[in-house]
Length: 403
Ligand SMILES: Cc1cc2nc3c(=O)[nH]c(=O)nc-3n(C[C@H](O)[C@H](O)[C@H](O)COP(=O)(O)O)c2cc1C
Image: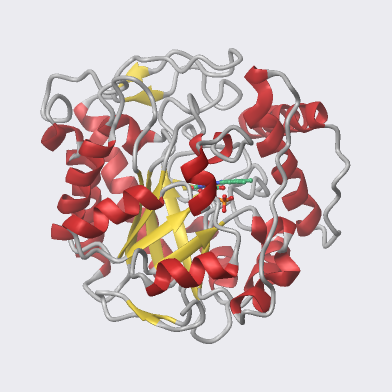
């Protein structure tokens, strides 16, 4: 099943059921353009034969970036580099651009007072400033920013887009009652909290046409008391189905609780260990209420598991991220059933506050190595991974602001 094609509602065909999920590259320079380092990285991912490659966060606003090394699209100035990126794929292989705005999850290195649905500050290692509440005009600018980036992705030759509404970034902040305290048409009821996401999907669809793939990455839950929960998420799924989204990717967590790393730990629930994928239970609930094409990402590592969930029709597409770093050279064999399982490493410092950044930093370092066409290196000290991440963001952030 893994190596069979899948037709999306818009009519486009994915040549197999394996997707490289988004991983922020952090490789762009202060101009925010795609560059040779990114092309070197994607050459390796293209050679995996995965049917779908989703880029890391591409931002619509240089003051609201998930990382100071993200690609940014504001106008056509980076179009030649985007065209080069999009032209790299093999025949039939899809490259989709993940489009995003970081809202309050923008570090102080980029913006001391980022804009967000409400002034609810993210408290993590002092890295995030108190956000300013977005005005109506700011919100309309976000909508036009998403549409502009999506239109340029299509113009450059990308095969689809994914709207990032998960992991605590801006669209997730609007969806969550913890971070959205608004009392206007953008806050309160779920109908209002989801208005921004729905408007973006609708306006992207009218700009891109009915035959262009549009995906959405959505949290099953934020795993925070009073946050966006499964009940909310199932309602959003129904709304997205009405908007004719082509592929829904299920994930979970925010910077306050990075579920996709934490659930990797030894102390995860027995039931999660048994079924491998972190969000499979939720995917099964989605299947009961909707026929939206479904992709799950998080924890999937064995060929047998992929085959069994695809055969059971629990999901349509399998997403993986970290194995595309640790096992990049084995993915094409995995697709053909010649490699039974892939690994990922659990990087721990023993210091609760920095576990996520130690793991994120480890993988970020490997991406930098891959971009230089070096092999991966396993023996970095976990604390140095955290420091690497902070230093990279500081250096790139300063270069962007003052360089
Ligand atoms: C280094 C790294 C960067 C990531 N960047 C992004 C990103 O830009 N956008 C996104 O939606 N998810 C991002 N993720 C999350 C992955 O897409 C995925 O949801 C998560 O790693 C769980 O999948 P896995 O267990 O197969 O790694 C990132 C993960 C890693 C390890």
